[in-house]
Length: 319
Ligand SMILES: Nc1nc2c(c(=O)[nH]1)N[C@H]1C(S)=C(S)[C@@H](COP(=O)(O)O)O[C@H]1N2
Ligand SMILES: [Mo]
Image (cartoon, rainbow, N blue to C red; front, side, top):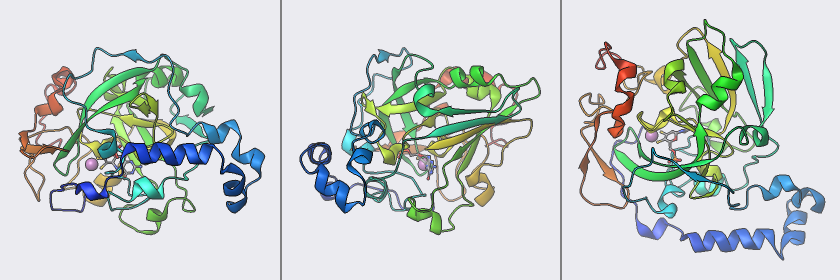
C-alpha cells in the first residue's frame, strides 16, 4: 500500500498455470526421494497427508452461492502471481515464489477473548463446519486495482456461532501467523507485526463475510492466504486477513495494523467508497487486472446489501 503508482502486469512476469501444475506434479511424483533428502526431511514426513493437502487439491462438494457476481472471473495466473502479502514481500510478484514452501499443516486457530470457553481448533475441523460454497466476489484493493475471484468457503458467521461470543463482545479481531523463519518480509518493519485486522461483530455476522480456504475449486494457494483467511468483499482488500491463527472477541474496537501504521490513510471501517479519497489518491475508479480502461468504483464495492449496517453513520468520518 506504500506503492503510489498504479500497477500493470507485464505478461513476461506471469507464469502460466500449466507450469505450476507441472511443478506440483514433479513435487508429488518421481523426484520425491531426492527432494525430500535435499530438504533434510524424512520421506515419511514428505509423504504425510499434511504435505499432500497443499498440492492443488480439488475441494469436493462445492455448492454455488447466490452471492456470486456474473462478471468475468480474473485469470488464475493473475490472482496467484500478483499479491499483497507483506509478510513475504512488498513486491507483488514476490509472494508466489516466497510462499511456495510455507507450512499450512498442522495448523490450529485459537478462538478466545469474550467467549465462554477458549478453543484451539484444527483447521481441518473448521473447514468441515459447513458446506463449502463457491462465492465469486469482486475484490477491490485500496491501491486502485480489482479482481473477480471464485473463492471457496462459507459464511464467517459459522465460526462466530460456534465461538458463542458473550453479550458484551462487540468486535472480532483476526491475527495472521507470525513465522519469521518462513516469512522473510517480517524482517521489514513496514507494519507492526503480526498482521491484525478486525470487524464489528454485526459485520462479521453478515452472510457475505466469508471464511475462505479455497479458490478456483482448489485449496487456497499459500500466497493467497492458505490455509484460512477471511474475505470481506465490501471492504478494501487489506481487511481480508490471510493465514489466520487467532480469532479474538472483544468489547473494544481492534487496532488493525494498517490503521495503526497510518491512521489518516486507513480507517477501521475501510468500506469501499468512491466518495472518500485516500489522502494520496482518488478512489473513484479502479482497474480490473487484465483490463485497460478504468471502471468506476461502486459504493460498498457494489454490495449494497450491507448498507443497513452503517445507517446513521457518517462514512466520511468513519472511513
Ligand atoms: N496477513 C496479511 N493479510 C493480507 C495482506 C497482508 O499483507 N498480510 N494484504 C491485504 C491486501 S492489501 C490485499 S489487497 C489482499 C490481497 O489478497 P490476494 O493476494 O489473495 O489477492 O490481502 C490482504 N490480506
Ligand atoms: Mo490491498
